[in-house]
Each structure stands twice: as structure tokens, then as C-alpha cells.
Amino acid sequence: MSKVITIDPGKSKCGLVLAEISEKKVYIAIIVKSELLENYLRNLVAAEDISRIVIGNGTSSREIREKLYFFNKEIITFEEKNTTYRAKARYFELFPISGLKFLMPKEVFILNKNLDAISALIILEDYCKMKFTLNQNMDFKTWLK
Image (cartoon, rainbow, N blue to C red; front, top):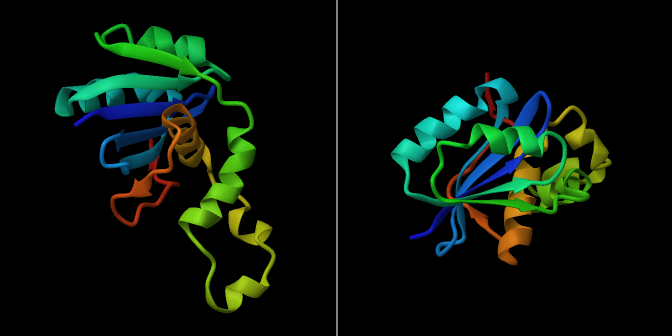
């Protein structure tokens, strides 16, 4: 079993995904305030056997990487260009619109949505070159505050 964490870094918040590569499943997908990320990762790394952490190379990636000094395994910086834009389309793949809502413009359903966790999922999928499924019905907008 090879578990990996991917992070979509940001100045105020980060998207974070924990996935099992061999099963192609996502177990955790949340948004974490940037100042809470280090403690959250310490606890997660202590509880799970994480093989590597993949960080998007965008905003604050260098600062996030410095906070991971305690992680003694592989830390990879990976291209994250257009992940926020692509997260909108991926949102509807994960959570298809049904019923009469299908007649409404899709943009209505993603206004004010925090797509950072889906951006972290896209970084993971690009890095692994495969699509992942959700282990359970997750809310990608879950905040750790």
C-alpha cells in the first residue's frame, strides 16, 4: 500500500488530499487554513504510512515545503498550472447534476465553492497519470479551521 498526500498550496488556505495509489482511492479531501497545515500534517503522518508528499509549485509552495522538515521521506514539487480552472470541470465529474437542476447553468452550482481540495486531487491525478475515485461520499469543501 502506497499512500500519498498532495497539497494545493495557498497563502491563506491549502487543498489537501490523502490517497492510496494502488487502490486509486481518495480517503481524505479537505481545505486547511495555511497556518494549521503543519500540525495537521504532523498528525496525519503519525497516523498513516505516507510514502511521499506532492506539493503544487504555485503560490506559497516554498513556504509549505519548509514546514515539512519533519517528514523524512520524499517531498516532490509538481506542476499545478490551471488546476483551479480544471477543478470546476472535475467537480461535475465527481458530483454530477441530476434532475431539474440539469437545466440550470453549471456555474450556479460552483459559485462560492472552495475548489482547493479538487485542485489537490488534480495535482495527484496528473502526478500519477490516472484518475482516482472517492472512498466515500466526500465533501471537498470541508474546512479545517
